[in-house]
Structure formats: structure tokens, C-alpha cells
Length: 424
Ligand code: F3S
Image 1 (tube, helix red, strand yellow):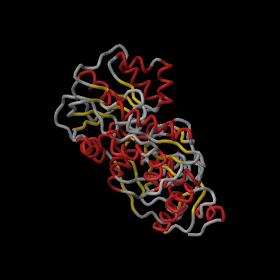
Image 2 (spheres, protein in one colour):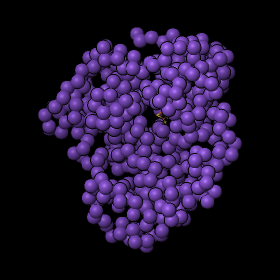
Image 3 (tube, helix red, strand yellow):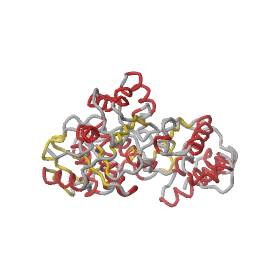
Image 4 (spheres, rainbow, N blue to C red):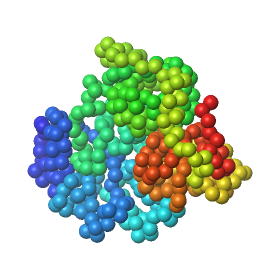
């Protein structure tokens, strides 16, 4: 790869051992990808903590050792300097305040807190959410980023028009110290053009509809780039968040275009970048029903656990849940966890929403989610969720059965302790 003089200096150790290890990693990574050069980035979203039992031995050697091995792929332990660019922590495995409810030990929670203190002082902003764009990390159109987490990546590329590949713990670790990432994939104009036209023949209105559309679409286009037309009603942040998360779960969609809404294509023709339209897909009632049936794998109607907030809830969604719960009581055999970024939890607390949810018997969590932490309430067999992504992953990861439905279906299931959701 071609390197600038500054990059060469980082590689030869003139800027310290950590940056040299980071440049070495980026060089190996970029060459494996066939990248010709690196590109500057000032926006990194990665995983910089140590919240699993498997890293205890490494933590015992100190957090420099943790970063060296997990974020720089280096057996040589280097001292971690300040992050060179704007860097944030994505979701973690542990809620820093509610770990006991998760069933996590005090010493593991303590380990995460010590890790956060170490990395926080070095400039990693502890947003601790899979939705950094909901708490102030909003890159502009065309900005080169280095983000992990599939639902965040597809939002970044599609809705914000910023540019990122789905990075890993190591490449984000190296990018945070150097401000560089290989220039390939979604950083290049050529790779951001549509490959499939999708004609949506039925109105897609609420979060559940957008989740079903995304789930159906991802399964078909896998990691290609769809452009969608039709009755896509009010495609607001919370709907696009669910749509992208679903499409990146059933397939590997990292980018899509909605002419008139997303910033890189004002028309279908522009989305295809002048190329002929190769493949046209149609979405109607039968496809919607198929997605719903694929997601609803449970048979037992008794609900042990309701999870709301994948991707993490916006404040608007927390308010809706609190409103639906006000003055009511969750079934004594059912747990309800509502997940939102910690910064938004503070607002929800200030507004009284947290209290409304807690008075009904629910728990408002931050920093984590069940699919990432692999911690659910004890003895759970059947889960209800409004998230296609969580309904897709929880059965595979934890062995539970899942029902998928609207927020209202899920809240009613938490109150009744049984699933009565249907596809209208
Ligand atoms: Fe976020 Fe966990 Fe869902 S990381 S997108 S809440 S699976």
C-alpha cells in the first residue's frame, strides 16, 4: 500500500510503539483487502472494554495488555496513548448499574468499570450503545468512519451518507490511534451504487412493518445494495433504525437507498449510478406474511420475558412504552426489560418515564442488550420482542423461542403474561 510520510513515520515507531503496532495491523489488513492506500478518519466506533469472563487473565496483566492483544492484535504489550481521533464505545455486555438484575457477578461488573475508567481517560467516549447516532455521534455525508456493529453501519452508510465498512475490534483499535482505515469497500463511490430495485406494493407504516420489510429484504439481497420505492410512509429515524437492523440480520445489508429520503440518491437512476437496473424485486402482502412467520418461531404462548429496545430505544420510544404501561402492572411471571442508551436514560428519568415503567414492574437498562450479554432473566423459555433483529438472534444464541410483534403487542404480552399478537 502507498503510505504518506506521516503514516510511514507512525509505522517506523517515530510516534510511539502503540501507533507502530496499529500501523502494522492496518497495513496487513489493507493488503489482505487489496486496498491501495489508507484514508483519514475522525470517527471511530468500536469495542474498547473488557466485560467478559474470558479476558480475566488478560485483565490481570493490565489494560495496556488488553488493548494490545484485543485491539491491536499484538503479543507485545504497548502503552496505550490517548486516542488520536474522535472515538466511542459501542454496546457492552454489562449494564453498569443493573448488572445484578442481568445475573452478572460483582467482580465482572467491577472489571468493566475499571476498563471504562482506563479507556475513558484515554479519550474513548463511553456512549455504550449500538446507536451512537442517537446520542450525538452523527457523522456528516461523505465523512469517512470506522464503525463496528451491523445496525450502526447500515444506518451510517444509508441514512447519514457517511462511509464505513463493518470494521472489527482490531481495525477500530488501530484506527483510533492513527486516524486511518483502509480505503476500500464503502469508502469508494463505485461500491455504493444500488444492485437491486425493490418495488414495495403495500403501505409500510409502523416500526413492525419496517422490521418485516427489512427482514424479508435481507434474506433475498444478502450483502447487496437495494433501492426501494413505493408506499414507504414517514421513514423516520426509529423506523429506519429497525429496518436496517432487520436487513443486516437476515442478510448482510450494509447500505440501501430510499430516493427522496436517504442522501445519496434523489432517484432510482441516481441510486444505480447510470447502470441498467439488473434485478427488480416486489414486496407485497405474501412477502410480509412470510417474514412474519419466519420470525415467529415460538409455539408456547406463555411469555417469560419481553425485550424492547433493539437497536436501543430512542427517547420517543421509551415515552411510548411508558405511556402504554402507565397505571398498569406487568404479570408476576413475566419480566420486561426496556433498553436505551444511558444518555437517553437520564432524560427518561428526568421526564418520569423510567418511574412509569418501573412502577409497572419493568426495568430500564442501558449499556447492553440480551443478545450481546447473553444474559436473560433466569429460566426464560419464551421471549416477546418488537425487534426483528433480537427475534432472529436470541433463539440462535440463547436457545429460547421468540415471538415478534408491535410494541403494543409486546406490552400487552408483558401485562397478560401470554402472547396474543397477530399480523393485521
Ligand atoms: Fe443493539 Fe443488541 Fe440489537 S447490539 S442492535 S440491541 S442485538
